[in-house]
Amino acid sequence: MFPLSWRMSRSYRLPSDYVGQPYYIAWSGAPRPKGEGWNEATFHDDGVLKLGSYRNPVQIAQFALTQYALAYDGHHMARARFLAQADWLIEAQRLDGGYPYPIALPAYNAAPGWLSGMAQGEAASVLLRAYSLTQDPRYRDAGLRALAPLRRDVRDGGASFLRDGAVFFEEVAAQPECHILNGHLYAAFAVWEYVRFGLGDEDLAHLHANAVETLKRWLPAYDAGGWSCYDLAIDDAGRRHYAPLWYHHFHIAQLRIYALMTATPAFAAMAERWNEALERNDVRARVWRYNAKSLLRSLRRRVTHGSVVAFAPLPGATAPPVRT
Image 1 (cartoon, rainbow, N blue to C red):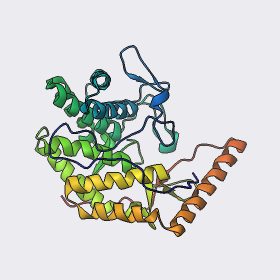
Image 2 (image 1 turned 90 degrees about the vertical axis):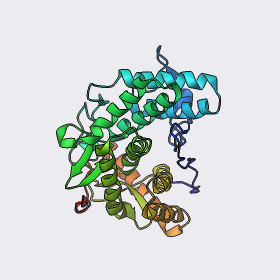
Image 3 (image 1 turned 135 degrees about the vertical axis):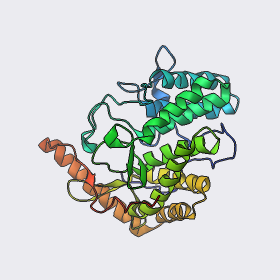
């Protein structure tokens, strides 16, 4: 919450023009908050990552993508671990391709059974690479099923905001939608991959094109004077939801990647604005003040046994409709 080192440290790869390249974002197995905690995890009997009280498709997909990068570099054990996660992602799918979460998220009004566009997209990216590695069509077909919930609106049991031509992939598919930026981009990476490499149909290509136009229009709403916001929401005190430094780094890397994927200079420009903010003392001071207030509010809630902060959409933040 109170960083002393602000330097951009998130490792990432820029997209290449071939299917099956190692994933774009590099995660770490180090303990949180800087890593995903895999170094201390164990495995289920079927070789799937065991971390926490339930099998989390995002954690499993990110671990799989990390193992794929190692396998790509010739690590034999990593290949087996990667395929164990990919096989689970086939087995865990519902018939409609969804990966429902068994827990509630009160802060986002999500009851057990909610879907995540981030989980759907990252699972699809894993399955695409499993198909590239093995040429087994089971993985390709499961990857396309994983994208199916991104074609449906949250109101219809899907994982996207699809209204008036606007397309946004919701990391937490619950109402009211709060439009989490990093989750949208992970899902968008997968949709881009399936369209770019000829595995998606015309409707998927149209969905992605509208998602790009939507993000062009909405992206300025995520900028808080040079710092990125985690979502387009406010807390119970009416404050914007500043991204922690860890996620701010993710946002910069993701936008640089997506700018090349989509040939969109506006995404690269915002990434540079947010990167330059890391060196601005006025922005650093503002982030520290924000985090100090957040810490005090959290401590107060613990003492008073107050409720979890409930986020609400920022008034006017859901940008005007995107023209189709």
